[in-house]
Amino acid sequence: MTNKLIILDRDGVINHDSDAYIKTVDEWIPIPGSMEAIARLNRAGYRVVVATNQSGIARGLFDLETLSTMHKKLHDLANAVGAHIDGIFFCPHGPEDKCNCRKPKPGLFQEIQSRIGIDLNGVPTVGDSLRDLQAGVSMGCIPYLVKTGKGIKTVETKAEELPKGTRVFEDLMAVARHLVPEDPFASRK
Image 1 (tube, rainbow, N blue to C red):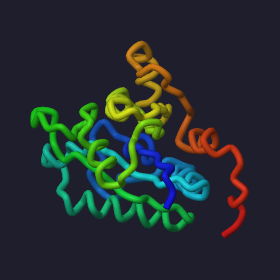
Image 2 (tube, rainbow, N blue to C red):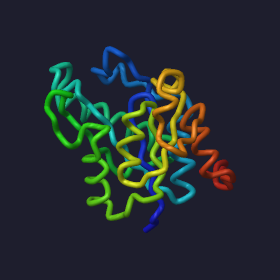
Image 3 (tube, rainbow, N blue to C red):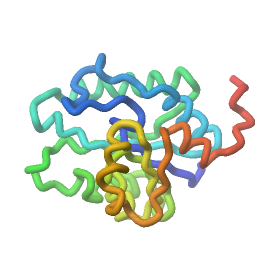
């Protein structure tokens, strides 16, 4: 069992995001290269987990069954390219619920640390928004911001607020190439 772990946000990092929320399986469309990036990380020994706010549930835009179907699609597409997601942790609450799991609060990351059994200090976390990074940094994670999803807007409007040491990349594949510069198994099936 490897001790390497990476925590990814979902919407805007793995799949395209929408200001109107991702409400259906058909709206859940992977960003080109994201599944291959996860596979590259896996081949280098990284366990990949997802931490995602899903306030569309609290807002009544979709239900847990629909979310489960979206995540099955994520797992199926990942498996199709030799990638594996070790777990998906989500917050179903809205901002008014005052929960501890909605990013930027640390609850999802605390649950990941507890369930996976790995200290998150020094673990990379990848997001497209300030709150994604703040949640991870509160647990000692190293922040990586991608310019997909809300990432460009985050860079343009929140640059001064980004956690110290935030690394900025074009997309998840660029992060994967940074973390895994050599991928000797990429051509093998």
